[in-house]
Length: 442
Picture (cartoon, rainbow, N blue to C red):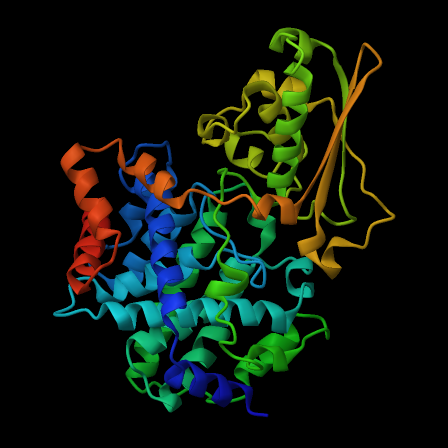
C-alpha cells in the first residue's frame, strides 16, 4: 500500500455530497462566530496585536497564521472527535488566506476543499490512534497541518503527483505540543499549522522536489508509538463524510471541551440546590467539598488544577465547576486574559479529582468520557449529577445564535451584511466574507 499516493488520489478525485456542503456552511458560521470578537478586539487578547507586528497580512502564509491564531484564541471553536482536535481553525484560515484578493473564487470548490480537509483530519486521528495525543502532541497543530494541506491541494486543483509531494512537505513540518496549553502558543499552534499548509502548497506547486511516498507513512508510524493503524486513513473514504458524521462539535462554552460535561453536571447540581427556594448565598456557603470523578486519564487536556490566569482557567476542571456553581454560566470574562476570579478560585479549592478506576481508561475511547460531580454540604446532604459526553453532545448548540451574538457588538449595518454573507449562497458571499475578515486584520 502506497498510503501517500492513495490519499492523494482520494483528495483530488472524490466528490462530497450536498449534506456535507450544508455541514461545511454551518462550520463556516461557527468559525466566524468565534473569530470575529478577536478580530474586532471586542475581547481582550494581547497575542494578535503582537503577531500583527511580526507578520505581514499582505502575504498568504502570514494571513493564514494570523487568522488561525484568532480562530483559536478564545478556545471556543469547533472540535472533531476522530481528530481529537479543532479542524476548522486550521483548515479555513489556510483556504481563506489563499483565496483572498484572488481574481475569482468558486464557492463549491472552496466547500469541497474544506470537507476534504476535515475528512483527512478525522482519518489521521484514527490512523495515529489516541496514542498520538497521549504522547503529548496537540493534534490541532500536528495533524492539522496535514489536513489543511490536503484542503489546499483540492482548492488549488493540484495534480495527484503534486498533492503527494505537498502532503510529504506538510508531514515533515507537522508538530505541536500539549505542553503549551494555557499559553498564547496554544492558539498560535493553529496559526502555525495553517501557515505550514500554505507554505507546503506553494512549494509543491512550484515543483520543489520532495519525496512523493513514504513520508506520510513515516509520520504516522513515528508519532503513535507503534499503535498506528494506517489503513484507517483511506478505508471507507467519505462513507460517510467526516464533516457529517460524527460531524463537527460546536462548543457551548469558551473552555476546553474536556470540561464541558463537568460544567453541565455542576449546572444540574446548582438547579437541585436552589429548587426548594434556598438562596444562592446559602447554597454556596453550605458547600464543604466537591468531588469530580471521570475515567482514568479523562483529565489529560483539563490538566490545570490551580490556574494562575484566565487562559489557564479554561483547562481547569476545578475552576470550571466552581464558576458554573456560582454564576450558572461560564462567563467569557472569567476565562479571558488577566487575573482569575478570586471568588471562583476560592470555591475551586474545594474541588477534588477522583478518577474512577473501575471505568475503562479514557484513551481507549474518549467518547465514553463522563464527569460525576458530587457536592457534599454542611447539612449532611450530598447533591450529585453524572453527565456523559454523549449526553452533552445530544444538546444542540445554537450556531446561528452564537454568530448573532458575536456580530452584535458592531454596527447594525455591518452585522446584517455579515449575517447575509455567512449564508454562503454564492461566490460573491464567500468573497465578501473573506474580504471582511482580512480587512479586520489590517
